[in-house]
Image 1 (cartoon, rainbow, N blue to C red):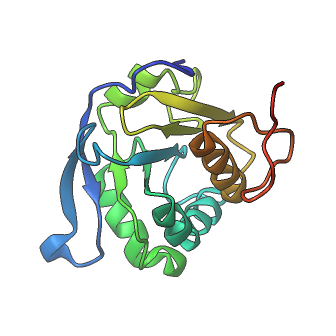
Image 2 (image 1 turned 135 degrees about the vertical axis):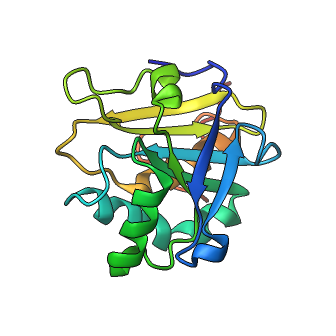
Length: 179
């Protein structure tokens, strides 16, 4: 699995960005948001139980990520059409404010090293990537355990200070000073 300090891999995928079929799909690559911090988060499968709770939670916090000059990009190995159908039929995903990446070839998940060995689906992996496409944070949960998007914001805040942040540090608190 790629880790801290690695370059986020090159990729090009289709993404679902709307429930309206006229403008539901677009292509996204590693340079689409080149001047921004990126939060990539992956889930195993659409039309499952834990995944929509996480996706909706990231969606509710999208404005907080944007306030930090960060874009959220979610994805799985499902197709853009499956993402679209899920957005249309799952109320809490109807107005999702970020793209749903469709890694149907598994190329991106393979490059990241986040495919579940037995299931062949994306693990619940989260990457915070800086504007230079360098991975600054990685976390991975088992398929059965959802993540905490608020913690992702806390880590993003800490990374953006470029200072030493103690355990449980929150934005606005003092960072550590080394004499």
